[in-house]
Length: 296
Image (tube, rainbow, N blue to C red; front, side, top):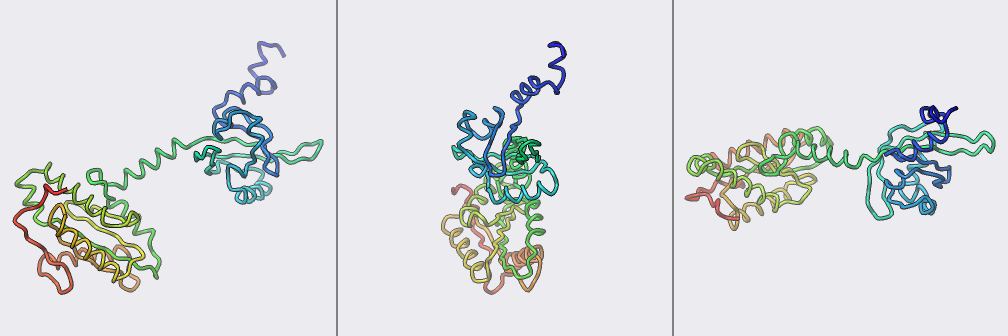
């Protein structure tokens, strides 16, 4: 083969070697015990290792869970390959990367040794962007609270008939009147301050959802009637002492095996009862002369 045509064919060893060295994807060879026998520069960059000699001080188990890897080897022996398996690797510097791993069985015809040839694609940036877009899609852009799309996800993911949960529905008093007097920009400031107030007074794992307008919902999982009432009373007291605005709330807990959506709807109806007629054991609406929108 002439030198002119040599680099036009992947069957040429030198061409193939240059191709592997210049790829942005990691290429590697390992054996059954997890030793990393060879790799291209991209693989070293993904794993945060400077040289091939340094890489040979590590095994696959230093970067990924080895028990899971052995399960994949068993699958590989049955199927012949593993394609685009998403996994996380932890580099020696502690940085975690998300990758797609594709690998194949190869057996040396002379020695019978079984080795694995693989390709590693770093998708950390893509995953971060995906997570950011997902997070943006379930957040209210004004307040940072969750939105109804997130709540719909909670409806479908929490179906255990034995689970307990509570819901607190919150509504800002006289918000329309305040908007009419001070304008929507001032009203937006009130909503932001109210959302921050609510999120400060619940645990990080408890969802605060903006239901629309000046209404908010707090969803409390693994929380029974006594705990839900205690949280509601704590919110009420905190609101009296340092709340940004006056608000009303109604709370309920799950009854029998009702769905989360049914519990949320009952909390909404409970709030209506509180605002309109009051109800023993519930919190009645306060009617201060004006909203304390200037409070932090």
